[in-house]
Image (cartoon, rainbow, N blue to C red):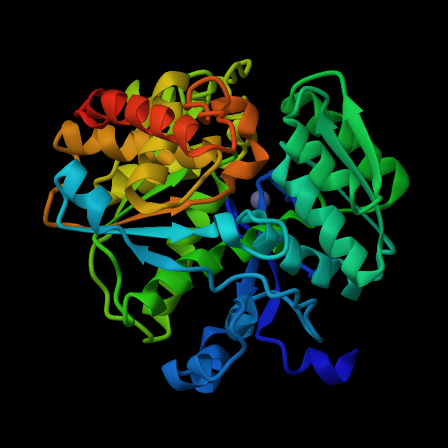
Length: 426
Ligand SMILES: *Cc1c(COP(=O)(O)O)cnc(C)c1O
Ligand SMILES: [Zn+2]
């Protein structure tokens, strides 16, 4: 591996709190000093000398076009993850009263239709490099889908853990890859605690536990892509969902790195976060002006972002505060309305996490916390076909008709009669 090592641009790990250095193995906490989280360290001079807008544009249409910014040494596992559409959302913008709104649509990410494919592509590439043959995760649903799928592609053994009350689409979307799936009778935080014990006992590569420093770097690509897709510019304001808070903090890191190596001109970007009221420990801390998290017990339809004790919560609060953003929560009803609004205005069907983002976006515009002239990017992180239970009773039913013109005529007349009220503003 030494030959490839010299090509890599990352130099090791470092404690995010005290700065203590560690070798780039499978570890995630500062065991020697303060038990803070570990982060990947890069040689930015090396990156600057190797990377330009042109080299990136000539790269693959996946996250691996940014491989110099990712913590891998050799050949990546490239399953086409990343470079998802950045959609100019003019109809939704007009409805909300904004002038420049974009939807970053990771609901069509490859291979499993959520942003988690980014973090898992990076984590499993690193897992393979570190010699792991069995990989695992503690998941709220999407992570299990991604880990099982990409492990299957890479020929790695896989055992994943989920809470037992997940949506059918998330369960089937894991089982089809034939991993070992453990459905734990408990919430995500209990699943996570169990997995920490399993990680210590079994020596597996847990993408979001002992491989977490590598895993979380995958989310930076959601920052890079938006910059590139906006024509090498930063937006003014971003809105993203918060579970552990990792994604949110890594979009910020992605922006900062592109500024640091001269790929984009610096300007202020406001960071606003979205949570479901039924699991909003970060929004609650933000509202109370606290910089620490009081854990909660999740109870919301937004299961993919239902983490009651979010590890990166304090960092997310710090970013929202420093950038002039905010962190807000919405009810389950508002989340369903958010899913429907995005579908009807833009033709994008998102899951409950995306409904949360759209509902918070709407709320922030109404509260004057997003300026109508700001270029705003809303991050849609998952696909609606995985959480159909959440909206099944809140959307219309088809007209069931006979295969005869008369039957259609009657149903069409009925639909036209009810269309007026359906299309009226809420
Ligand atoms: C996991 C997840 C998130 C947020 O994850 P973080 O833990 O905050 O990084 C957002 N949306 C969806 C759909 C997810 O699955
Ligand atoms: Zn430390």
